[in-house]
Length: 236
Length: 244
Image (cartoon, rainbow over all chains, first blue to last red; front, side):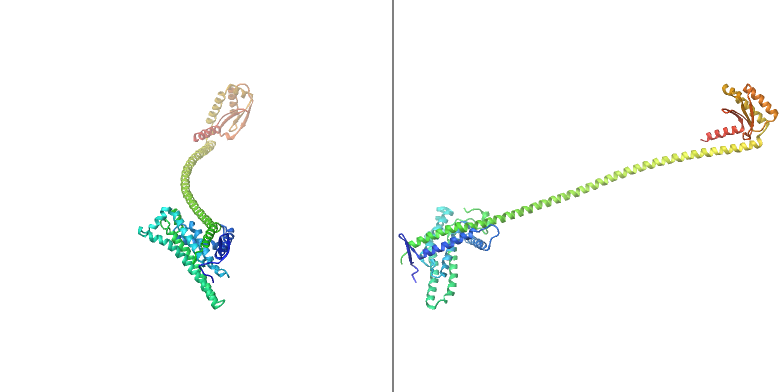
C-alpha cells in the first residue's frame, strides 16, 4: 500500500505528472457529468418520472439545507455546495470499486477541495458585501479578534482538509489491513461502515463549507421560509 | 513529505470544472424545472383564487338579482293589488250604475204596466157600464119621446153635413131603425128625410135592434147615426180616452 501522502504517477502530460487520483477524479467527473446530462435531458415541468422526482427531491432538500444553514437564498450556492457534496460522496464511495483508490484518501485532493472552499469563501464574501464588507467580517466580534479570525480562516480550511483526509484515509487503510490479515469477506462490514463514513464526511464537508461561507455573508433578517425570503427581497 | 502541487492544482481545476459542468447540465435545469412547476402551481392557485373571486362575484350578482326579483315581485303584487282595487271599484260603480238603470227601467216598466192596466180596466169598466146602460135602455128606455128626439138629432146631423156629402145622399141611402116603424111613422120619416136631403132619394128601410133605440142613415161611404148604440160607443171611447 502506498503512502496516503503521495500518489502514483500514471503518466506525464508534458512536464505535468498525472497521478492516479487525478485520473480517478476524471472518471468521477465523467460519470457525474454524463449521468447528469442524461438525467436532465428528459426533464419535464409536467408530471415527473421517478428519477426526476428523486433529483427534484434531492435539489429541494439541498435548498432547504442551504436555507437553514446559511439563512439566505440557495440559488447562488446550490451548484457549489451540491457539487462538492456529490463529488466527495462519489469519491468516497469509489473505494467500493475494486482496484480504485478514492481520490479523497489522497491528501492532495482534500487539499484541493479545501483550497476551493477557501477561495469560494473569499469570492462569495466579496460578492456579498464587497471587498470592504468582506474585510469587515474579520472585525467580528471586535477588532481584537482580527488576528484570530485571520488564523481561523486558514486553520478551518486546514481542518476541512485534514478531517476529510483522515476519515477517508483511515477507512481505506483499515479495510486494506483487515483484508490483508483476515481474508476476503471479513472487511465487508467495515466497507459498509466506510459507506456511512463517506456519506457523513461528504455531508460534514458540505455543511462546513456552507457555514464558513455564511460567516462572511452580509445577511438581511433571518428568513424562515422560502416564501419569506422572496418577500424580504435580495440581500443587501 | 513532499507537497504534490501538480496534483493539487489539477484537482482544483478538476473540481472547479466539475462544479461548472454540473451547474450547467444538472443544477440549473433541475432548479429551472422546479421553479417552472412552482410557477405553474402558483398560477393555478391564482387561477383558482380568481375563479373563487369570480364565483363570489357571481354569487353576489345572483343574490343581488334575487333581491331585485323580490323587490320586483313585491312591486308587481302591489301594482296588481292596486289594479284589482281600481278594477273592483270600477266594477262596483258600473254595477251600481247598471242596477240603477235596471231599477229605473223596472220602475218605468211597472209604471207603464200600471198605466196600461189602469187604461185597460178603465176601458173594461166603460164597456161594462155602456153594456149595462145599453141593456137598461133596451129594456126600459125605449119611448116615443126618445125616438123623436133621436130622429130630430139625425135630421140635424144631416143638415150639418157638408153639401157634397149631403147631396150624395140624394142618390139613395139605407135608413136603419132599431125597430120597424109603423106606416105613419115611416111616411113622416120619409118626408122629413127627403126634406132634409133634398131631391128624390131612394130609401131602403132596414131594422137593426143593435141600435137599441134610434136611427142611422148609411151609404157605402157615409154613415150618419143618431141612436143609443152610437152614443154608447162614443161614451165608451170618451171614457177610455179619459182613462188613458
